[in-house]
Length: 84
Image (cartoon, rainbow, N blue to C red):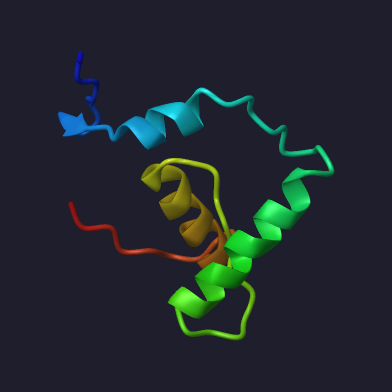
C-alpha cells in the first residue's frame, strides 16, 4: 500500500481513516449543518481550557492570531514596544 504523508511541517504519516474523512464532501461554513458542529467544537474548547467564557476561534495563521490580539489590546495612538 502506498503511504501518504502530510508535509507540513512533516513528513507526518496520515492514518487511512483521516484520508477517508478528508475525502468526504466539505460542509460550507454557512450551511445549517455546520452550526451544530461549530457549537460542539466551541463547547469542547471551553472544557479543554477549563473556562465558562466564550472561546474565540480564528480561521487564520498564527500571524493572523497575533494581529487580532494586537489590534484588540491596543488603540490608535497607543505606544507598543516591539523586540526583534
